[in-house]
Each structure stands twice: as C-alpha cells, then as structure tokens.
Image 1 (cartoon, rainbow, N blue to C red):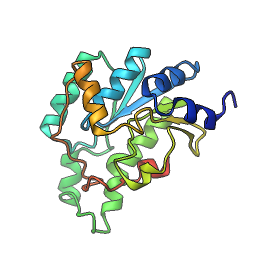
Image 2: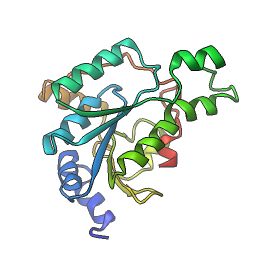
Image 3: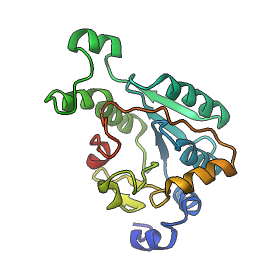
Length: 206
C-alpha cells in the first residue's frame, strides 16, 4: 500500500478538492460515476478540473425523468465529459412489456428489478472499465449507511473508493455550484431507491 488510509482521511477528508487532486494524482486508472441527481455537477466539475478526460460512467436505468436526461446532456456538454453510458440488457419498453411497471419496494420482485436496471450494469461497467480508483458523489447526510463511511476506503474488489464530498452539506454543494456557475436539477427520481434515505444496494455491495 502506497499510502495510509487513516492519514489521508484525517488530513484530506474534509477538503474535497484536495482529496480529488490526491486521488487523481496517484497515477492509477480512475473513473467517476454519476447518476445526474441533484448536485452531481459538483463532483463532475471537481474531477474534470484535475483530469479533463477522466472516464465518467452513468448507469442509465431508462427510468430517469425528462429533466434528468436534459440535465445530463447539459452537464456533459458544459464539462466536455468523457461519458460512457451503461444500460440494462433489456430496454425499459421490453422489460415493461414482459414484466409490467416498476414493482413497489415492498414487492418481492423489486430486488430483481434493481439488479437488472442498476446493479448488473454497474458490475458490467466495473468489469469493462477495470478502475483502480472510483470517485463517487456519496454524501454522509444522504443515508444512515453513508454516514458511517469514510472518504477513502478500499472495497472488496480492491478498488480505492473516494468520496470527496462525503462531509459536505447541501448548502456546501449549492455554494460550489454558485461559485462555478454550474447547472443543477431537482426533478430526479430513482425507482430502485424510491425513498431518498433508502439504499439501492450498489454502495452496500461496493
């Protein structure tokens, strides 16, 4: 190991821009994941300021709002994102024709839905992109599980997972957007989570 995680978390964990520079300065293959939810332009701007061509990975379930798709287009153009989009193996139209609308979170079929539209595409992305570093916009105030995470960790696959804005509040995020004149989008819905404080499983597995 070339660094001490505890030291990095202590020294840089509350400085998102410094942590991003550190992570992308390790000389390892890095990706940044996004779902174009509110405030996502923050992490995308931070990452591309350091490494303009960093691969940005979006798992598009096919169930995003029209506003989210327009926001994704705007941010991708504004920041010249090196964007790769991963879709489920079945289109939304195909899935709904066979299996019907999105199952409720209390429906036993919801887990299979989440696996199909988010988790499997993400596993495929990790396999194909083979990152050594994974930048994510996780924030501690999002869920109780995320509140227990560290800004830098190493997941079960050996990937260095870096969450630069983990300790930032919505106000911090908003001020960054204002400072850099970046767009935002609040018309966002994730059918695998449904509720804001609920995990879909992606960050619990990784």
